[in-house]
Length: 383
Length: 138
Image (cartoon, rainbow over all chains, first blue to last red; front, side, top):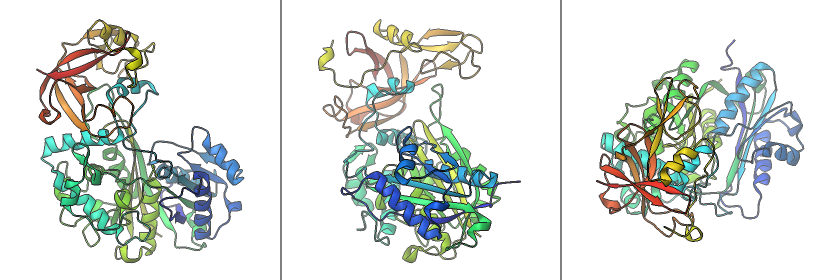
């Protein structure tokens, strides 16, 4: 029997903080767990499956200690910012297989108050491929910038087209009282902001914030009796890309593999999707992800993202909370994609509500486009 | 040659899978690998061919010619050594023989760099032991 549709997201909570020098990351995990469990109408004692990432190689154990959890099933898959989307898929499989009944997924980070320059900190020599890269000064933003440069070369995509994505995200952040930046910006503002790594300007880059969030998943059957309308996991898939043996096309990103597979598993088509939450570490991330997922053809992303199509009121609203570009980005943003999709599918997104949203596509990117990265696509729907 | 103590950028780790590559660079020769069994070329150097998992490897000397596959002019990097040299050009160069590698473009103004631009290797001895392969316009 397929696992799809058998597991639901019953609780979702985004920590409102964007700057928390008075808090620890574990505290943000714990407060987020409290929020998501209350949202679901469950208690910490109901949790028998625990999923987290961003906490160090065996940090899941420390976090279990912190929360005094004794789960029957754990998973600390760490594939970058997409990890929490991955956790949802793994929880769906675990719950359907009977390995656990109530899965808790948590995230917390104080990246901003620790003054961690996520995108421009540079790279040190760690695992084997690093020694062929770090000596030349790669950065996270630089890796995405090389994808953008390549896209511009192959398809004539312009900086103004990328800027439109930042402008749209900021407009949507204006509707989100918790967003880090809410003042409207223009294409000219983006183009006039200082160059970080060409062709990406400051305003092509996501914010750095503190923050966290949590999700509670359980069987669809049980979720129907809980506090909030269940949001079903209808399909999903993971993929990994890297430079391989040195001949990889940088525009062939993981989403090209995970997107079609997730849609097929859910039995839905692109036209069925009412809103889309895609990782927006940089403007280029949105553009190439929407192409790779198949919402438009390769090379058409620039035009596709223009004219309000990916904004509220457009054909495919994307990141209705303002995304990483304007709302929050504590380093690993995947969980917020899921939380915003849940808000939309419950009809609880307030002024950012997509009318009659029944199906959402979530796509998390982890690691770095242009380098080793993961892509996790998940299709969520109303019960 | 730069004094080791004055060189602040990250240095590569010379390990058992890549020693031949670094030793060749120190002689100012650029090599990549080819599988003796299936013939697949690969970069970066590693012990097994990912295409067929054979350990039979030959080192192939690259001409040192190539073209710019993509690049970025880096204006911000907190890493010591790089933060003093902004802006610099991070690039992927496609060798004439096929494999691509991450490198820096030197000897040209960052604003003059273009994808497809022909380049050639320059060997930069950064410490007594370590040489890096960088590229400059032909």
